[in-house]
Amino acid sequence: MRMFRQHARKFCAVFALSVSVLTLPVCAQKADNEYMAGSVLWQQTSGERRALSYQAFALARMLLDRDLKTNRNRRMKRAVIVDVDETILDNSRYQGMLLETRTNYASKTWTEWCNRAEATAVPGAVEFLRYANSRGVRVFYLTNRKVIEKDGTARNLRKVGFPEVTDETLLVRTDSSMKEPRRRAIASKYRVVLLMGDNLNDFAEVFENSKTVDSRLAATEQEKNQFGSRFIVLPNPMYGNWEDAIYGDPSKLTEEEKAAKRKAAVRN
Image (cartoon, helix red, strand yellow):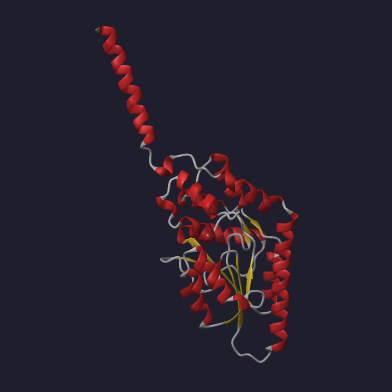
């Protein structure tokens, strides 16, 4: 009987531990994010990524020069609006950390990364924005980083050489992640010549209101004449609203459910 009781207690302890593991919240589970390795490697090591970045900023300079030449008598001062993350600052090291630790994006680790101010400049970004500033064009840094990340972001931008980083020009998220109200506020005082970003939401309200794969593709077709003339996209295969469009609401999905949705979205 005594031996039976000992075995029974051991069984109950093991059973309790098993139940606790099975009922861990999704955020505590190891992330199934190895699929990101290729995109992070491409961003960090490929000559193609560097070439595309140089190409984007070369095009931006050509378009700006054309505007400076053909619209000399405009009274409203010019502005260029740029997104920050993966547009002018490279955060692929943060993505690499997520891979190494098998964790998903979390506001805590992201804020820590932002406030370390260790992101590097995207190739060609500093040179173009310093040129625009030298020609009297106001540069606005429009980001969805939060207020608690603003000081670290400003330090990072200044450290790598971006011009005129001030409270007025660095516009972080204060309430909504929608960028359209901030874009309109800039456009009320400046003539916006170019917008640059890695995410369609960086460009116009129509994209911010498009949540599915089909609606985002339709919005891109609707605005196709703007790309290469007023909108310039930087490459970022690591993350973005394109991925949320596949998942729906990723916060409600397990790692297995997200993997299933990715697989189902691939055409063959």
